[in-house]
Amino acid sequence: MTPFDHDLERGLRNRRSVLGDAWVDRSLSKANAFNADFQAFINRYAWHEVWGRPGLDHRTRRTLVLAITLALGRWEEFELHVRAALSGGDEASRLSVDEIKEVLIQSAIYAGVPAANTGHALALAILRELGEAPEHADLHARLAPALQPAAVPEIAHPGVGRSHFTTTAPALHFTVRGAPLGQAGQTGQTAHSAHSAHSAHPAVTRTFVLCHGLGTDHMVWDALANALVAAWPGARVVCFDLRGHGLSDAPTSACTLADLVADAHHLLDALGALGAPGGTGTASGPITWIGHGLGGTIGQALAAQSPARLAALVLAHTPATPATPASLPAPSLAALAALSTLSTPPRDGTATDATTREAQADAVMAHWFSADFRQAQAATVARWRRRLLSAPLSGLALHPVAVAAAQARPDATALTALPTLVIAGALDTDAPPTEARQHLLRHPGAALVLLPDAGHLGMLEQPALFQAAVLPWLASLAQP
Image (spheres, rainbow, N blue to C red):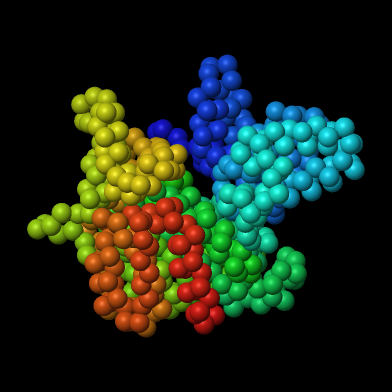
């Protein structure tokens, strides 16, 4: 098995968000046998364990880093973070010139005037390098939009949640953000009973379960999951790995959509049991199910089978019709099936064709992401390509799940009354807008949002638009 290091990948993601792709690419290109361990240490410890913690948004952390590096005279790091704060990484976490000036003035009081004087000189040189010399009276009017203050949430939740596993077979890995397990929720427990067993936490107000599609894992939901916790502080947000994906057990025999739905039931049962003080309670529900691709298909089947367990359903990039003997599966599904077949070692023991695996992975990326995104966000595409190729190389791995996805045909007859949001990408070849409109026939009254210029993974290509589609719609629903 080729491991997919979530800590390292999340660290690289945060590092790129703060410093920008160009600087990180230059730094990584200098890695060698001598400093590789140190590079890995920095990415995991500084950029994941610290920059990924909840409680402080990235703009606040930028401010702290500037003040500390100035106070200690770590001028190389100070210059790096001044430049990144003005023009690199995520626009929403950048600082304005006035904010950096205030950091310098504040530092002069606590770190000394000589340090602040050096900091001013270095920051001024960077401003001139960026073509924004403050000698010009119209400085602020001429500043690029990237240098202007950006609106950010008052409370950021960049954490990744706490990991748990179901006790069923296969064991499913899931993470919990927001209200922790053990806190009373929608299962009949009261806030008072939760207080008597634990602490004065309010009851869980809402439960969201997020299910990814074929070939990805729970990490695909990081941005939306954190946004949900920010929007509903009393909610519990659960992201889980399908069997054969992420940290969940890989199947060793064929499976069907019914098996995947049974897995979902086991997860909800586990949330109900673990969510009650003392480890006992009823099954969790009703929940809001947010599914992508195969995850949406599972949500439909779950709601058709047990409608009382769901309060609402979000279908993101979810195919409406399965493949039949007379038709071809979705393009990336065909490539995934071919790739997962390669994950099974030949009976004669010969080595897996690595070149073919790489080619199939490229074919999947071409259908997951639009051409423009693949060019502009190569690091993101490379991260999910690594995630795909890190699937287990022994056992059947993804293959039975890919087969189940191709043959999936949920019974939608029981879904007419369920509030449903359908999200489609204008450039999605796996679940094109025409199929998204078929969902509207199955779900009368459902809302449809089309993401322009997005392929099959809209939550990654256009996270802001994706959240803008989901959050207001959820807020408009009656509280479950």
